[in-house]
Length: 373
Image 1 (cartoon, rainbow, N blue to C red):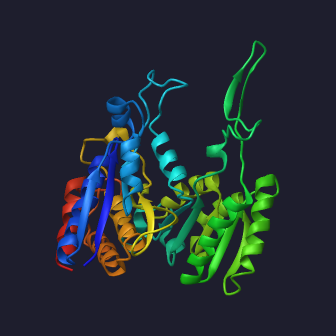
Image 2: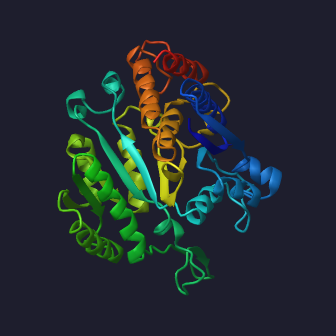
Image 3: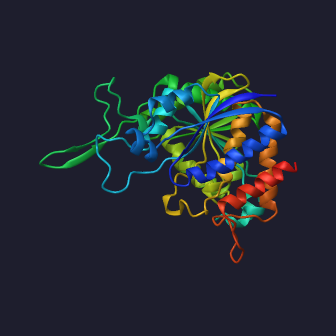
């Protein structure tokens, strides 16, 4: 029997709806495999700003820091007219968690289910054999350009009488690059021993340094076949020959964009899970934050329309990476695939002319299948 403490941050929009499905799945795993999970739920994002004046309170952050893993839903955006330049923003919760908990490697597996080939914008013959994982650097780069400790590295809008201009700073240290690249090579060794490093070294100095570090780390992993690839080439090949890729490692901004592009291979961004890992070990794995990649989707929030698969598969990643429960993770993943093969579809992946089920019904069918596994 395994014991674990899991912080649960449902967040905004559809976050609470899909997180509820993931918790139902974890409850079945707890029951069937005789584990003991303790869940601590907290406010984050818009609800936290309204109730506590900040995107994530210190007490909620401490709960996360002392847990074995964090199950995260989504955070949204402040309604028009409510945002202030010096005020709290929902996304600051994620930035704080990633930065202060040392979560530098974001894992995003992309594996289209064959029954959903028709939901993808690509022809089925281009999807066959596609099974890749992105390792995205998560705690540095352009999204963290404002560094008070480094003078002259701003992220701001500048207004003068003559003009208005904006500046963002793309900064990477050698250490920040090396730790995520090493993680990617280790993942590649456990898979097909193929790795693609994506950058823009023909333009960016940060990418030149990125290549230097990759080449040095590669020498420590002689069994891995690897290559450099420019980000625009990678974007093209993702939709032309996606099965060519196995492990893709890249920096923060490029990873953010490329993984959303790759989501379309699966038919919907609602299908994709993610794991954000650092270097802190738990009793049986690595501490991490787990979330679907689809965002808060406020336009469908509360309408029982969101696809819970990304959240459920994120829970499977939690079981595997933070709790060391590979068998249980595989059972959850198999339950999801069985339900999809049986024709169950939420509206984002439903075929034309076929009825779609709601969020709760999709979650219920996954739970039922898991109980029968």
